[in-house]
Length: 154
Image 1 (spheres, rainbow, N blue to C red):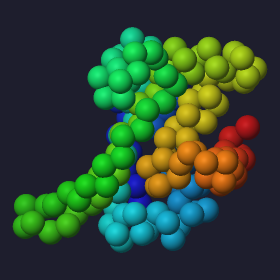
Image 2: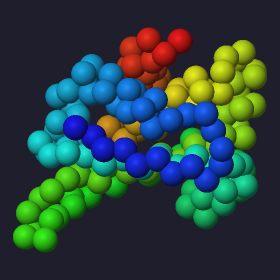
Image 3: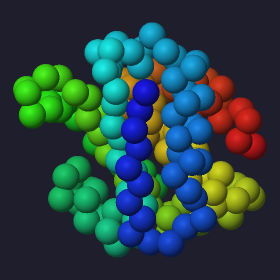
Image 4: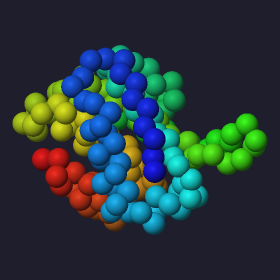
């Protein structure tokens, strides 16, 4: 299973359980891929809810793009070991979400902020597990999985 750490730097109505529900749904849909990435161990993902200024700093400093963005995903796939040097869990990565941008996008799409944050989280989660959108084929595959995961969260 995947453990989730939620860091709220800004206020939101999203709860840890909302993100955990998305992870569970994705894990059920794509179990083989998840197990391959996690090498049979537990995994850990950190979600950080930020404002536009904070996410812009990350975007500028790490990606060289001096502008805010909706979501940034940092994939680590690093092994964590216990005190006896036994492989304990897989640190999968961090997903950073700008609530300012999510709020704007939710208004444009005419749905709730919570739904937009869950859409962005799902996008980041899929990147963590190797999905990408560099080609039309990759984008289509990622979109289809995202729709399946978010099906009940409409």
